[in-house]
Length: 77
Image (cartoon, rainbow, N blue to C red; front, side, top):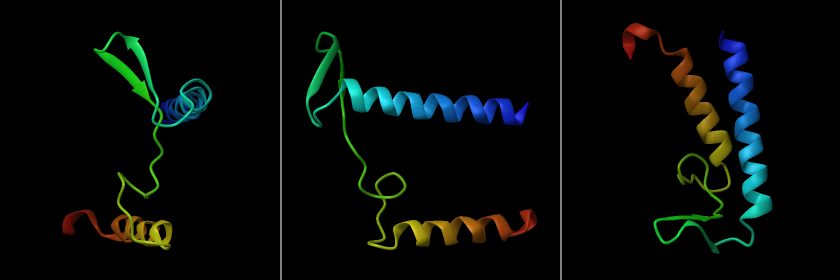
């Protein structure tokens, strides 16, 4: 059950990102979906996770943090 769900989520994520790039360009332009109630705007996240930035080494720093978190035994979390 894990792999089909993972694959479905990956395909959905890549597809929606591609659609956003195609139909919501240019960046920072509002596209009304339901009047002023629902608007979509293309925006890019220049940081790593949720806008968090560790400078030029963000990817490396967060990868190391994730690896450490995976190595910590469950009883120490």
